[in-house]
Image (tube, rainbow, N blue to C red; front, side, top):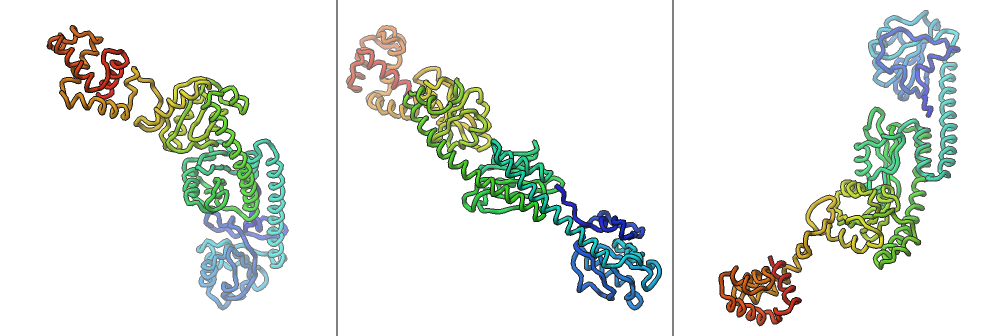
Length: 473
């Protein structure tokens, strides 16, 4: 990107003008400030009629009645960036006291020879401004044409953003509506600082642009979408954008907004399709689900989150991922993506064991069970050592209610029944372990049968009692 702006250095470099810079210890960049205009005046105080960033030309007639230091001080305070002295009009050469005063105030002083009219200097600078403006307009038109062609390629938005980065000669990044990075060029253009500023802009929820300190050249961020419905942020690693550059960037922002609008409509159709595929998997029709859309490679994992999953985020990181109703189905080969999701969005995620799509209902139940467990981040389902160990609070409450009658009748009765069942319902061995007579134990068992209204002589009744005793613990 050619953003060369006419400066005093470029004016002095025109050989036809034969301008000569007087030697002086000038501040860094004194000759490279943008030069807006060239004006001539012999007034003792021309500052009320001067603009900012201007070079003044004079023949010095006013210096015969005005102290030189006062004159130069006024120019410095007004922001004059250079002084040209026309020699051999009223006096030969450049006055030494003027050169000393300009050097003291850091104002470049140059000689305009008698043969170079002031109007020629002003015209030369005006031509430079016109050339620069024409060059910038030409650049903008060529850039917009290149961007339009890039947008027609596959992944048109990414191609256009990459082309924008090349045309501007700086990094270009794009973040989605959740603050996730979706594009950067060149690689490494997106920093944590830039992402944090983008997230802050999105959090405000209003259309805006913001210039920030970033690296050596700063950066400018632009929101995509409308207030209350932001779709993302584009970042350009440049703080100073001239009108032509801003026009080119604005065209890309409009292009991105249109692409995201179309993408949202497509995403809505994909979400509806995924919801229908999820229904097929829950009904055990994995074969039909495969015919509807491409599904992740088996074996698969099923995840459930405590917050809505971001479909675009998953699809970018896990091939074929199915996301619907807070459920994510993805290939076990992409298992690490689950940890990245939990970290990026700071959510808890329940994760199943891997299996086939035909085993989906079991995997979904495992993921839901894992999500109910205490913990943070990704909670992976692990089958308990025994079935009874998996009984939860509801089963414990039911067991305690079922055994309440035994405890009210005799607190020792519950333990006696437990020991009896632990000895495989053998009366003599259980009685010996309890230290009571076998007839006493038989009477206690009969008493328990009456309290529980069940026949403990049958296996189902004994199994239910054993489960209640274990759950009540």
